[in-house]
Amino acid sequence: MEQYAIKGGNPLVGEVEIGGAKNAALPILAASVMTDETVYIENMPDVRDTNVLLCAMENIGVIVKRTDRHKVTLNASNISELVVEDENIKKIRASYYLIGALLGKYKHAEVALPGGCDIGCRAIDQHIKGFRALGAEVKIEHGLIKTHAEHLRGSHIYMDVVSVGATINIMMAAVMAEGTTIIENSAKEPHVVDLANFLNSMGANIKGAGTDVIRIKGVSHLHGTEYAVIPDQIEAGTFMFAAAVTKGDVTVKNVIPKHLESITAKLLEIGCEVEEADDCIRVVASKPLQHTQVKTLPYPGFPTDMQPQITVALGLSKGTSIVTESIFENRFKYVDELTRMGANIKVEGNTAIIDGVSRYTGANISAPDLRAGAALVLAAMSAEGFSTVDDIRYIERGYEDFHLKLQGLGAQIELVETERDLQKFKLKIG
Image (cartoon, rainbow, N blue to C red; front, top):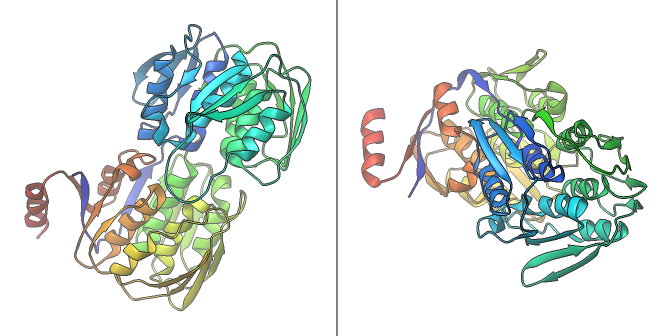
C-alpha cells in the first residue's frame, strides 16, 4: 500500500537538483527508433513513464542499455514488430509518440490507445488529421490506432487547436517524408524545441520550433547521435512552489530560467522573492502570501501542469484568488482532498474561486493524478499535524525520488508500505 507519511510545519530550506524533463524525454526516446544507428541519451529521468516506454520499445526489438541511472543507449536496427500493445504502455499518454516515429521510419504503426492521468479529454483528432495530411491511412480498431502509408509526402497542416502531442507526432512523421511540411499554429513548449533539436542532431531539417510555424524539409535517413535532455520545468516549478507553500528558502539547480518565466512571475505577484542565476533559481517566502488571478495557457503562458501547485499556494494566501483552467476540463478533482485539509475553494466549471485560509491541517488524502498528487504533498508539508498521501504511483510517473529530494530540504516525509511503518514514522517524528 505504498504511501507518503508526512508531518507538516517545517519550512523547506536548501538546494535541490532538477532532473531531465519527462515531457521531453518521452518523445526523444520514441524518436530514437527512427535511425538504425546507435543513439546515446543523457539526463534521462528515472521515472515510471520513461521506464514503461523503454520496456515497450524493448518488446518490439529495440536494444536498450542503461549505462547508468540517467544515461541510456538505444539501437533500433533490429525492430521486429510494428505493433505496440504492451499492457503497461496503455497506462501512459506518451505511447502515441511511437505512432509518429514508426510511421515516419517504417510507413506503418499500430499502437494501443493511450492512458495516463484522468484529467479530461485529450482527443487525438489533430494527430490523425496530421497523419492523413501526410498521406497515411488511419483507423482505430480493437483498441489500436493503425496507420499505414505507401509514401509520406510533405503537406501544409494548420492545427485547429494548439496541441503539444499532435505537434510532436506530426513533426516525427514528417522528418522523412518527401518534400516540405509546414505546421501552423504549432505548440511552442520547450519539449517541442528539445525534440526538434534532437531530430536535427540526427540529420533532420526542422526550422521554427518554438514559434507557431514549424517548417520541415524531409530527409532520406537519420543517423545516430549523443544528446542530453533539457531540465524539467514542471519539477522545478513544483519545488519553487514548495518554498512558497512552506514559507521556505529553496534554490532549484540545473534549470533553464527562461522556461520558468510564467512561474517566476506568479511567485513574485504573490509576494515571494525570486533570484535568478544562469542555471538556478532561488525562491524565498518570508512574507505572507497575497492573492492573484491565474489562467492556464499554452507556453509561454502559465502551464496547466503547474495549476494544482499554485492553487495550493493561493489557498494559503490573503484574500480571494481565481484560477481558470483553459487546457483540461477535469483538472480540479484534487480540490475535494484539499478541502479536507481546511482549504476554502469553490469550483464552478473550469474556474476555482479560492478564499485563503491561515493554515491547512493534516488529513488522509489520495493523489488523483500526477501533478495534483505532487501539489497535495506540498499542502501536507505545510499543514499542521500528520498526513498520508495514497495512490503515489501517479506521482512516481513524473517525479524521480520526490520524497528523498524533499527530505534533503528538511521535510518530514517518508515512503511507507505498511501500517507498522506508518506507526514507526509517527513515533520517530513525535
